[in-house]
Image 1 (cartoon, rainbow, N blue to C red):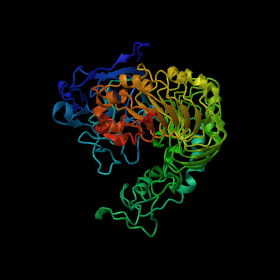
Image 2: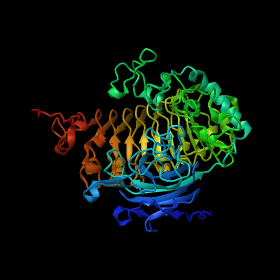
Image 3: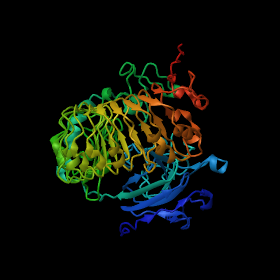
Length: 635
């Protein structure tokens, strides 16, 4: 199917009135064929791999559907201006109507995903072929009701000749967040999305070098601890706490002496394995269970037998039996999603043989050693997330003209500086997260080459010195977070003027000094955290533009605590707190500037009356205005 040529991407139709749509439930006739009960109004049929554009006002939804054959995997990618929710279901159109709009809450969906700006901008619905607790094994009678032979309470899936998996229309409702979500933003959502159905050729196998790489990855980083995984009573049902150790039960504290379970689920093997705390710490997760379920539940003749290895790695390989592994129609491995599995040790060099790998996600594990440079030299890798491991040594350089778009290196032990080659060799880089490292280096001047960069997240990264002048080149940057570093000097005006797309600025706990920069009204800035620095002087003109561009729906914040600011509390602060287009609902906790040198009411020792009425606790103590000394007349 041919996609619309850029920029003529198909636009999704937004709707804010679910009741205007027909009740969209599919049925089957006597031959088992689908009878679609909907018309074209308001439903967007998505073509696999074709980008679409979306523009939604607060509380509006776009109702979509896409055909998924049995055994296929659904993936979608997006670029969005703000957080959003995707509700999903099979053969029923999911919806969410807020009570604040219609007077009565109404919702119907099987599950949902909530995506923030901090989320990776690609998501794959991973299948669970053993237990059937996934997107593809959901019935239509309620939220997270699973179907198929592997479900806890087996029932037939809605359709499909294979009783263990659905096929047919999957419905996806994209909803712009609004104030009916406590932690959400509102306003206009703009997004570009691509939904892709990854269909594998039946029995095609995995190319041998890639299969060997997967085997070595499993054998070296997972199997040693998996062989020690406690087995309790394998005759129990698959999800029973007394069957065998699982990370799900472990992290929920079900093996703890202090955990109280339903009497029907009492854990009976405290003598064999127990915990006394630290259960949710990925650094101490004791066993790797990647692919263990397939070793146990693939032997239908003896459900208590543990196979010597995962069946998906046997023979020619079977991607459909490899949890966390996504393949294309030729069997090439295109995604590895192995987060939080207690992988440990060093990554084998053979991972370079995964030559079609577009996404590698191995966060929250116990991996160590150096990152194999071959990962960065991949000509196809777009997203790499190794957050929260123990990788050390230098950060490798990508290959020239790398397609890398997202790189998350946070919470590791890299300590040899931030190489400029990251920005030069990866011109498409959109997100760089290097939080909680010990780089002990300045931001390199080569950052000017990262003109596609949208998010630079470097809290507690060991950055030193001043901001390089080249940062004014980052015109697409929307989030800059450099909190708790050793940065100093002024935050220059040219940086603000150049970063014309900036929405969030976090510089807390550094040594910045001098006057605040001026935030023009044209800047879409909503969150400013400049506390615990040494900014000084009056600042009314600098925040006037920031106050002017806010809307009534803005969840904006301004934190100027613990600086050396002086003068009167600016009139712009009054407008932010009291104007209809100021901070949302005039919530004074969105603005705070304690521990500065702001002036009291002239002639007094306390704030002006409007400051007190707004909430003087958010301004701290004021500094009395110095009064001229009286001059006594002489004779």
